Length: 264
Ligand code: NAD
Image (cartoon, rainbow, N blue to C red):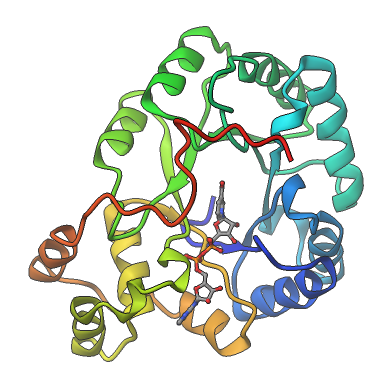
């Protein structure tokens, strides 16, 4: 899996086609969509029209909260593949554990079947808490490969990253730029970026890469799409990393998985 990919949350289907086309042109090879984003069709079309060999691309989608019952999950995997126009995805994630329910265990059985059938090359989770991770890994025949969680300098998730590593999971950062809401105006991040001739966004992405996170920034603006992948020609030093580590303040921009059970 490429460590840096492209996310398409909140991008309408037709715009997803042009944004993903732009991203693939800029060099991204990993795309993160979801049933809930309602843009699997545009995303899949862009992937298929790109002319890039399928085995050079890494496509991730996610199972929505209303589809955790075993039969629903089996059907939902097929429906996602149908919308994407692909015969397999490289990774499928349980989007949320859904607070108060353990039906994700049924969804996981359906994922194990999709994995065995070659419909998903890898299976994982998103927004899993330490408790949900422990519950699932105890029951699972196939271990999840990754937990995709909200993660950025203001919410560094040290405990959850450590718990994932203990169970052999990678951690993937969603909203890695803090949704562009304030984080990128942080004076420390701007200064560290400038020191390397880069933007605050590039400094943040570099921090993710050097921390070991898989990262999937989103933009629909061509110049930013290019900027966000132009992060492989510099390195943060120990002082930069220490300064960014000190920005951790447990600040979420998205919902808390411990209480989130939305079925919309
Ligand atoms: P993000 O942190 O990637 O921020 C995106 C926003 O930041 C953009 O809309 C833009 O306003 C701004 N931005 C982007 N590049 C910039 C740049 N170079 N300079 C200045 N501003 C810039 O936010 P996100 O979209 O929430 O997260 C990324 C991806 O993570 C999503 O698209 C989606 O694929 C995934 N995600 C997953 C979940 C989940 O529950 N699993 C939740 C949210 C997001």
